[in-house]
Image (cartoon, rainbow, N blue to C red; front, side, top):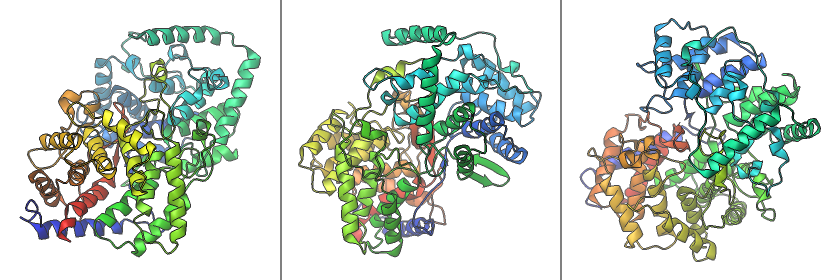
Length: 626
């Protein structure tokens, strides 16, 4: 028994049992797990604006969504992009406009407070491009001041820079739809003004790099072209974009299972003449209702849903907690996961045309965009279930492993959705101020891919060695790793350590020891670990620092366990923190956002992270006692 945990072994064991039972209780009868994916109120504001634009206003939905938006407003009148974060100008503008749409008068105290902040922060003039687009749709912002995005972009061959496939899948789907919107530049009149949000100072885009200055010049040229586009080329471009959009609608009516391309695709097709009764439009609007959370008279929209991810991680956590491999709950989960494997080629196959499909997506329906992260975690989860059809499971894992190998980028690392999606020029476009728009390899995805290869006894193969070299080179000077899909250095480090050890790196290796030292140095005085999302913008102040959270404490413990430090004093304090902060029902409270959509811009509170990861960490740290 480890000395670090022996001070309260039964308490830790009891916490693990409670946490395990709470996680089991959240399984859906069909076998999957799905926690809410909470983001910020721009989702709700844009849903209301979408319905207004399409002529599908529903007074009851408008009122309940407005109640939710008001409930998220802070005392200073602003809205943030994550819990405890700073006020965000664009989010506040969009929330304000949505509330004006719902009938809130600008003279109301909460509206005056929001407007005061907007003006003090530079006014609506300094909002992001997406916010300006929503305003332009209703004549509240001039289209002339929106960066150009002509539909002719879809005609560019793949070898030409800035073609659609240079962008990450989430940006690609959004941008293709917005090229159609840009070509039409519609205006739907609203019976309201937002002059109270203006400063009168027009903000002109600027760029510090040569590439940025070149693209600003291109933007000016494209605006000039828009005054007299070549009609035959424009018609061909719009027709191709329309076909491209329609072909990528998923079975649940979404586009990519995520909000941005979904709403803009509906607007684009409507502008192309699709009525609300057209099957594509009807499926799209009905599908949104499946992403709605209604609670206590409010209505909020999930930007995405994560059942595959949640199910894979829940299976791993339950196995770590000692749940038998043949437990009926795990077999049901495996059955559900096996049915979700993607056997159709998607956009990823353009870069890897000879690679057989076999991955998993994040969502219920997203056959066009499976990803390496989910695929690795699902395969790892399936490998730990004793299934009555073992050959079926082995075949699924083998196919997933080959697909993962084929998705390795030329650098040796793995991105999430595409291989070698690294053209950084895309980031310099004046249009692209809404977050990451390419999908380069990341430490966390690469780590999960390496864990899968090691589990399949392929750690000695060239692909694994190259992946290890890439991951090693990405280690920060202080010993941590950057976390692309979770906040942030705690996540990256907690993912990298198990991968290094899995592929054969000794716990005494300098890379491991430096990472352990970083984790120990960033443990909070209360024994937990936490990191604020502002670490993406200001790592010097925020890296590894923030209120302790259940998920981030678990990530650190998982890393320490992999490094052979589960018996260390730091791990013991972390375990005690989880025990002491557990709720009576076996859950943990975590209002903080520890998931990442776009570093620096968009964050997520995965409501199951607070359950899956602590169970996983406690299970691993207590394994020596069983």
